[in-house]
Length: 192
Image: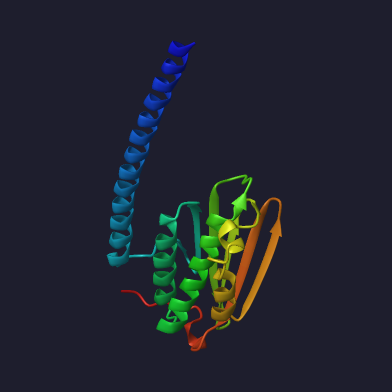
């Protein structure tokens, strides 16, 4: 009996050691992935060609539910808005609102059909419309329940003129609209 307990204890120690090594390796791989991702975002930031996501007069991206995608969508949408003549404050605040909606779409969905987020934007009649969609139902967030987070929708409402959130078991769609301070940006494109 004693030798059986000793063997179980040794196996438990061995498994804990193995788990600790796997955790350390996982942290190191995450750091490497973050460095690669940061480099990619920086490369895209310096890129002077057509923005990623530009589809003629519209903007559209289909992204994985990964935090690194936030920087990518923010940068690409900002570049698209600027190429269309949208002013600095308008463009920055629209991109920030979109980023917050994407963060929610990456964090909150449960039981997702697809681990993805769709972002679409259009510019019409002196206003920008941005739609962010995920593919799962939202549950209560522990961070929101603890009062440590949960201000994203509040920020979106402050940055945009109109915000609508429609949720179902198949996904949540956040539709945001903002009138531009310089409505002449509609349909114009400045090329660099």
